[in-house]
Length: 134
Image 1: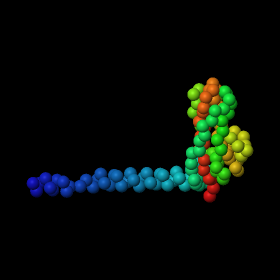
Image 2: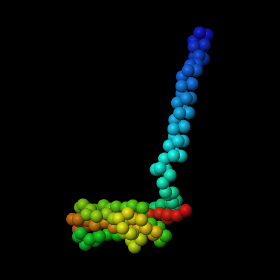
Image 3: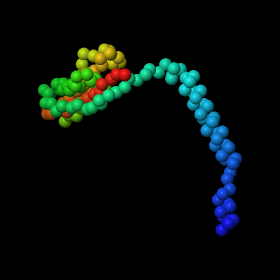
Image 4: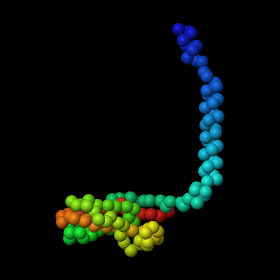
């Protein structure tokens, strides 16, 4: 029994040394990449999101007509979508804060609009909304 206990207490210092060298090398490489990478140097700070919520509405638009849901006051639409009995011909952000295809605007989208291609019944449109700021 004593022989087995001694065997369990044996430790392979070479494996520990190799593992330590590996950890130091990876840490040094990551530090170099993070401090010298152009990607990280040019990265923009992402503003904080507060009060994230999903708002939705069930509507019966005319066939092929749009259905829109708006975010609560002070919030912008981060994304959205919809469900219909047919296919969706469009699912896009809506609101006066949208400028161009890149969505680069001070105010951002204030809602979400879907258009159903071949549906004559009810549709559900939703938007993921949040307050965006520092």
